[in-house]
Length: 621
Image (cartoon, rainbow, N blue to C red):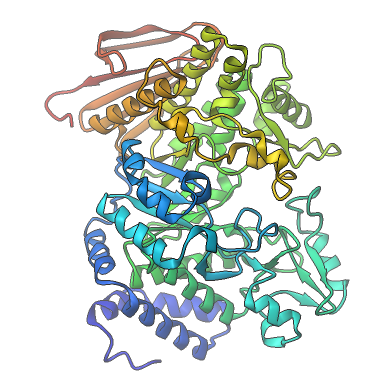
């Protein structure tokens, strides 16, 4: 063990709380390698010493209020720096706009140095300690996070931990034949073992990047590449990899990043004869990383990217006594929401939400309608089968609907990673374009535009009704449309996800206060939703949440209760006006109109919603 007598008492006190578990878990993974563990502890203390006074003060404040992110007050925004404001200094200059949007959680998409044309949108990192030059420098990043903290904004950054770019120093030295660095990846002399892996490991991109291995000509060996050939999987069986990658993560935390998004979390441990997904060792690694943050930077949170069904997602929270990720994505609700938009039938969404509502309230999800990625139709097909729904045919219907190929559909989207053999294409498009706003503007149909915007607003109201942190995709606050210019960019044209990754349209943003425009109508609605949510206790993250039976398969009903305030939220996914056949006896107020309204046989217009609230006694917020 290193000599800890000279270490800061505050650090030592934090370490004392978890060192026994940390050492046991580390030893279990790495066969009791005490030298590697001693280095790990020394690395943690070095990062603690390098942490600024400003960040240490923030840590101490958050240690006192450790549930600071759980109360339902945060609103997030996801953005690419280059799309929003060209570079980090530009984002800093636009913090007033971000605050005007009501945002206090800012997720910056990958911005570390990556090779042009071989980066998968920044997810092939060549250097974890350098910002992509055209976006700025590490100092610019630290300046931005400091400015955000002064404005009460927390920042999130992706930490790509499953793989590095083939241009990373480790990969370059591995190509040159240095065994020490080849041991940081998965190198094989021939295809015998890789072929055994392929028998059980699914393919992530069977059309655009088939297989899980690539021949490396420079090394004359085979290397594991689960995602793309230029993304080399790291070997976390090697303690040097875990030590150095945790060091890289803490370095980013010391630039002022508040939330570390652990990219591709389920993939980081590989074992022959398995799917190499969700293995027990993954949870051990994430648990140790959680403890590392508790010791070095307890103001920092871990966000797990686990894009799988709920049964696979929830274990990444860990337990109350031994937490892993602080937050996870609610990906299944997102996909089920768009299914409901297309089918106008809320039964699957109710079924899915029932699973979420049954979880302990301390679990925090990030909720979203759209993100940087495609929409994958990972729905509960065994549940849908009872209604005569077959998986392949249903995926085709959904993709046809959201491309506007179905009668009555005004949606405009494009396919991603189409696999005609399996019928497994995914879907791209901005929220507004998928809601029909683009088609309405193209047709210059004012009535259709209002109707499409109403759907967009209703979906955001549903987003704000869920417990957790609602995250807007940058541009959604002004109903930004698809950007088809990516077709003309040789580096982007083969990736349809750039359809909804268009640059921020600042001319559109300038119209946000003009309520006669599409931009103004959407912006004012988002602001109103945020204001209502901030003023009413029922939206608190600690609220009891349940499904309200509406006796109408087109209308979703959600109930919330917290400290004397009860909310009944109703959402009509139909193209027709519908009635929610509820019969609540209290006196209610419609939060959207401010008028008194009985919660009995409530009429909800097409694409509309109702937030009905009642209070009990003097305990309301």
